[in-house]
Image (cartoon, rainbow, N blue to C red):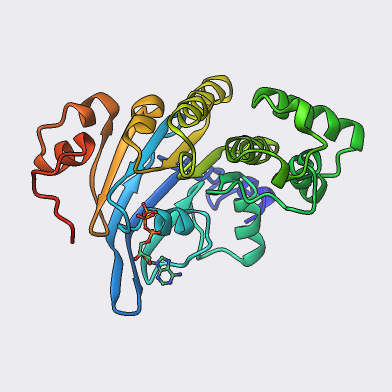
Length: 272
Ligand SMILES: Nc1ncnc2c1ncn2[C@@H]1O[C@H](COP(=O)(O)OP(=O)(O)OP(=O)(O)O)[C@@H](O)[C@H]1O
């Protein structure tokens, strides 16, 4: 429907009311996903809080990355809905889905940088591809973003000439250049030592405090969750078993949430 359609008078002289704003920017409704014999997501439902950082925690192999791929539209649910900005992403055209995706920034595990481009060109890439900004404007945005993640001195380096932590920061800068409403992080801590993990977690919190937005951080690293979380979501066996504020999660009396967040061997959570 175009804006002209929305402005058209209704029979009886009144105007059509604009569509109500969605309650949440990212809504996951009863999503099921199976790969071969394995049911990975099994009726998973969650509304991510807007303008907040939610960490998605859960044991290895429980479907956290599969959930993230559903949210960005890389995987289609067998059943259920993924709604972003109020739209079911599998009930819109491919072009509309592509437009919705542009409002997402994603930081993949390895930063997902192009090996053949230097750091500057990697960060400039989304601006060159998706906007008609001049090279002068692009330079200003890229340098602002690289400064924010502390990489302005590394612009001429290739991805394989910098450390894993720097690659993640470059990936973060690239994820931010289009000023996304939603930023997703797939295990930002993977492959980093505890000090670099802590520094990256602090950077995520600082950037969020500066720009706002809906951040979803997939991790199984409890210290990362403690540093960045406003809200904590816990997945187990393909379902969302807990969603609440960080204090509530870390002080939960639920045996499963307690065991998982304490990293304890004793409790309902076994090796299966
Ligand atoms: N495209 C796919 N085809 C088949 N199986 C898949 C596919 N993607 C994921 N899986 C399987 O789904 C399960 C969940 O994977 P996922 O990567 O979401 O786990 P995770 O919770 O993110 O785990 P970790 O914390 O260890 O990264 C795994 O058993 C994985 O092998």
